[in-house]
Image 1 (cartoon, one colour):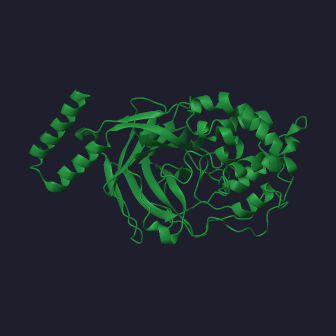
Image 2 (image 1 turned 120 degrees about the horizontal axis):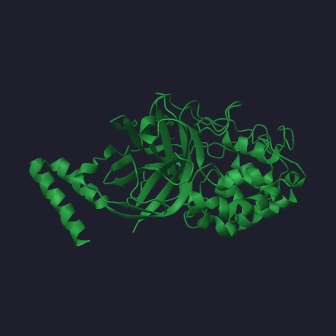
Image 3 (image 1 turned 180 degrees about the vertical axis):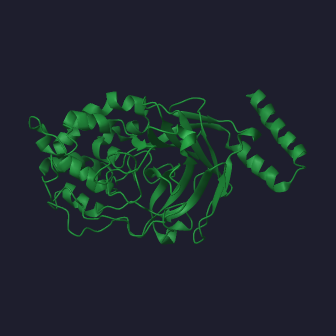
Length: 218
Length: 184
């Protein structure tokens, strides 16, 4: 337990009371609490089992009172990366960028370049799927075309964990979790981007490796 | 650069002519053109809590801008050190978790921070049968990770640390798109 304290104690102290929070909420100094902070990532088979669903959540721990004012940052691209040949380099990307109340979703497509930098050169032929960002309090607004469906807006944070007790354990103030535990993320919201695509657009069969990135316009 | 600009302006002009300057379309096209540019990475994520738990404080920002194909070589050793500090049983000869992975092998998997997702069947972090075939909204990923860190070969070790006893979300999910629950 002492070792546990030592490993995590450093991180907790460095953040001066702002804890590093799982799953990826506030995970690192440069992005914590900012508009590019990814809180979570999900990839699962859709209700239509021919489809795959990707979820990126941003800006965690929004209270209901603050959710109405929460916005996607127009300088931030969220990029879903998909590797389908096992080299951990993206073969397909799905890019989502907000502008003037809409989320524009490009892809799945083969990226012109891979890695840390993404260049978006929007031509009329790109034909992204645009969806109105759902305002707080409204029913979910979705858009679909060519088998791809998109949603963007505030949602309940689907992540659950007794993070408060976890910090007690790593702080040396408790020796175990409680039973039952308390969900630290209960009653909080995130800004979500949900994209559902036909599996045929991302390789069709086999195993993919996938991850999500946030990238800032230069 | 100038050529791009001319191309972009040309596209707008052509669009305006083709679509007779219909206001909404023109506005959307203008907004789309404004999206053009170069975007540089700030954050990334594959599996839940990996950066939070296994990357040492001073390296967290760097981990977020290390491409996955280079993460294993750069971070496996740090992951193993931090795992063995967290869960000292891994230092015992032959010690593994319930997946049969010892400290080096387990952290070799984790250090490349991507989600492995099957396109051919059930997608779940762990459902008792399938392992690391995706991540469902309902998956209790933290307990799975705690079990793999603290639970030993058969999930029986360190019971007080291997389950946070929060097993489900505070709102039910939807069976249809967009699946996530409405905000509070």
